Structures are given as C-alpha cells and as structure tokens.
Picture 1 (cartoon, rainbow, N blue to C red):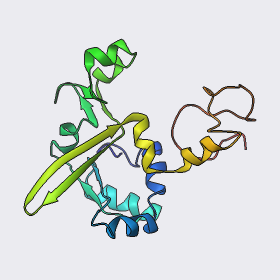
Picture 2 (cartoon, rainbow, N blue to C red; picture 1 turned 90 degrees about the vertical axis):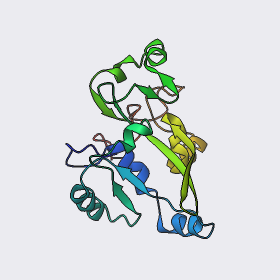
Picture 3 (cartoon, one colour; picture 1 turned 45 degrees about the horizontal axis):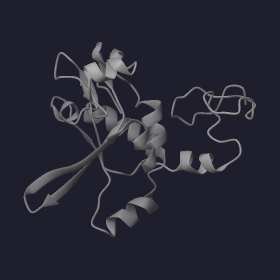
Length: 175
C-alpha cells in the first residue's frame, strides 16, 4: 500500500482503506477481531498520510523488515523468490504477468492471523480480485445497471465514460 519511496499511498489501496469505517471496525471488535494495515513506508510517512485521510484504523510500518516480502505483497526477485496470488514467476509469466519479476513492486493482498496467547498463526491470505471483498463499493456497483463502469465490461457503451481497470474511486476527469 505504501512503498518507502512514495509520498502517498497507492490509489487503489487508498480506495479500499477509505471503506474501512469505524462502524465496521466496531463490529469486528465485538467478535475479538482487529483490522490493521502494514506497509513498508517509514512510520512518519504513514502517520502523515493517515492523518490527511482522516483514517482511524491501526497502521503499522514494516520498514526495514521482511514482513511484506514474507507475505508476497512486496515483489522483488532480488530479495525473495517471486510468488504472487499463489503463482510462481513461471506461472505468472504464462498468464501475462511475468512483469512481476522485473524490479520491485507493491501488490494488493490481505493476510489473516490468529493470536493464541503468545503464539501467532498465519491462517489465510488473499490477493488480486479477492481483496475486493474487504471494501464494498464494487459489490454494490455490480448490482447496478451501469456496473463498475470499466472498459472491460459488456455491453460496451452503457456508461458515458468507461474507466480503466484500476481499482480506485477518484473522480473521472470527464465528469
């Protein structure tokens, strides 16, 4: 969500984080569950961006650690073998995503943990389109006649200005 070199969080991750309401977090808390975000940016950058967005959820920095590499959301072949969405680099290349083996990138993903006393267990991870489940806007849009208003949707032309297949909710420049 936030590379150490960036000045702001990724737009699509920001869109998802915007949907993490205090009400949702209260409902999770009532079931002994906490939502938190972990990014590689230094804590000072995270705190500044978090304040600018008015977010109240816990957001931690993994700056200088392997955390994001260990859970396959920071992809850099020079640091760890490339694995994303449970696919190796060879498998990613076969589906047109071999570019993930070039350089370093931050990719969407969520991991779930269970804490039992002093022990912590990694119980689940999801990536790519699966990560949309933690928002809600796309699911509501999918119920409507105009849908997500992305250029890949059929039938073509049902939305006045189709958007790229990029998960963010910034206002369209043509509106």
